[in-house]
Image (cartoon, rainbow, N blue to C red; front, side, top):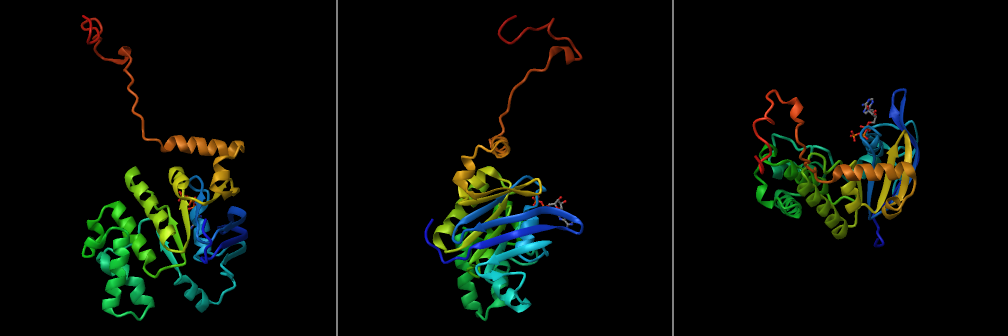
Length: 280
Ligand SMILES: Nc1ncnc2c1ncn2[C@@H]1O[C@H](COP(=O)(O)OP(=O)(O)OP(=O)(O)O)[C@@H](O)[C@H]1O
């Protein structure tokens, strides 16, 4: 990985949950600046909860999260608001506003947080939409776009303020394999072109293998793995191995197996009338 000035994200003894319930205990990890980190785990293991805590949308039960040098839970409200403007988020459903066309959706953060005038806004929005291949769709409304296009539009909006940190919640969920692969390519391209720390929450093992530099695997209320992807793929820890191999198999293209119905289940016994197709 190239040397980067994008911030590391340091998670220290973080315990997260809701009310009396602890979802994951004592998470420790440093997500490297300028790299793509994937937070991986089965459904319900607490990935989104972790993301909510890192974005301070939810308060942890204990521990700290540092974005660069800032302990986000210690920052004053205004300071955190400023920090948040340096963060882009791609939500699971793209979170586009249905009443606004693509241009206005992507322009929203610029209008809210900058003094840019309309012609400058136009230039920025156009460049971000062309980054994701949607420059010809500015006038379209979200419901006129495919799921993959909506994700890419959400990505354009997350990128519009040139963030230092980009969070993506399940970017490939709901996408077919081709659209998923395209989105993975796009994230890799963003990593190459912009000096940015990218964090992807996912249960998509194929996607993780393609994009990740660093991986945190959550499960059973704890951190099952944290480290570089190559070390995860080479692990001989039996639990992780089972997870990787089983999930890996699940991601293969569905194989249609032809099985013949047992003649005994048929209402009409045809065997005595016809044999197979090649013999009488
Ligand atoms: N607002 C909430 N209040 C109470 N419990 C919640 C809340 N949101 C999630 N949970 C619980 O916390 C646990 C972790 O949920 P979370 O959404 O973080 O999992 P996840 O790994 O992101 O799952 P998925 O991959 O299905 O999105 C689950 O048991 C869930 O039921």
